[in-house]
Length: 263
Image (tube, rainbow, N blue to C red):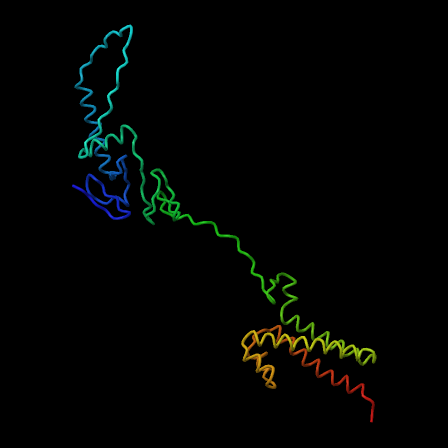
């Protein structure tokens, strides 16, 4: 009887059952035998061999001739195709098995016959537990500012709040120096103009990167830039710098007014 199986299905040629998920053995012809049929055939072969050895009479060896002619060895006859038990016995006596395996009861992956731990899922068939891989060491999460990772003290100093406070202190300190000496008034106005233009360019670039329409609205419509910075951008660094630039611009008018001659 011919048995056909789909891809990945292994049919025992003795009992006709699928042994894909069972302990099995395959002979040189590529035929599969489940472990139960294999053990039965081995027991029958051993019993038959014991009976033949008991029934064979003991014959004394003939004296050896002086010159022994070479004797051609007869090739062993191949077992008939339908003698499945003989083929199974050959597997036991000659060690011609080419595949001996069993499957993991948890994931169904093939395992070596004496293997205890499944390499696919880590299941231990003796203890019934699953060995999990050691967790990878946790990588500290570093905050990013402007695409550059910040960590430790540098990350704290680069936070939006700290940077905003530092800019505000620098602006107010330079403004206070204008009341100490008139020499600092032009310095203050120059620094504020450079700083303010830098913030304006940063704001417009950010708006155009979001969309062309947002960029044109921020450039052409008065006070829309305030809505973009504090309502749409969501960038705390831009919001802090923009606020300090507005305050510095207002203080610039006070510096100019202080330097004007009295009428």
